[in-house]
Image 1: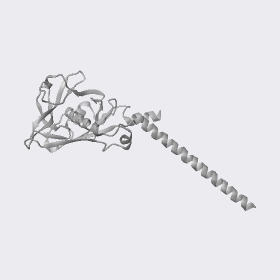
Image 2: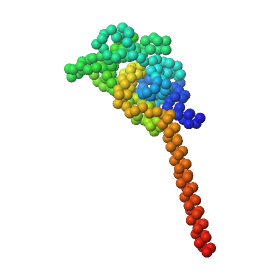
Image 3: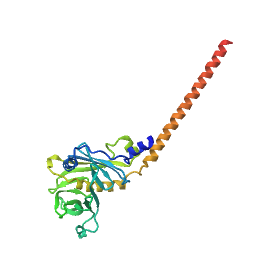
Image 4: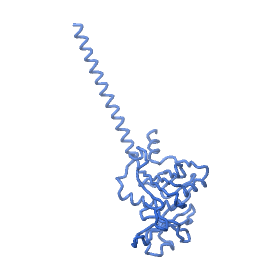
Length: 256
């Protein structure tokens, strides 16, 4: 039972992370205004419950494509395929944000835009339910946040930096961090962060190592540890037995 409990804790399948704000409203406000956001997620499982952190405090948790605050679903993110926003076939991937009742809360969509050097590139554009653009956009891969003057005002990164040893070795959990420059005076909707997270996650899965198998890896390590302990104990017993034999021989020789 202890081993199973430990496996569940390490892999994120057990109890959901607990919110560290006084209310759900405070947690949501923090997620929309924080300078630093951390999203922990398993790249290969939608069952894990992993923490979402705003400026060092747990604000909620992620399970699959759904965000929970104080144990209640706040919103989910999904691909959009059959809504009016997709009528323009020149646009790329579109994500939609939906509340627990299925009502749309906004969008993120890949679009070609003119760049400062006179070329064109793909960006992730954020839109409200009326199709109006937000005050910022993102690079296609979710790594850089721009204002509409083309100035970088934030960045995103996914990796294993900041994870503990066991999470790095025995899980497929990764840490995504988002930073927003406070000098930009931007309020970045957390739902748009989730769209950037999806792009980072998609790109990372293409280059990631082979998935870990947490429970089997942990049990294997425990079994190896037990075997080593038994092996060392057996060798110590053999050494002690040999020493006792040598001492006995020396005593017999002294008596003669």
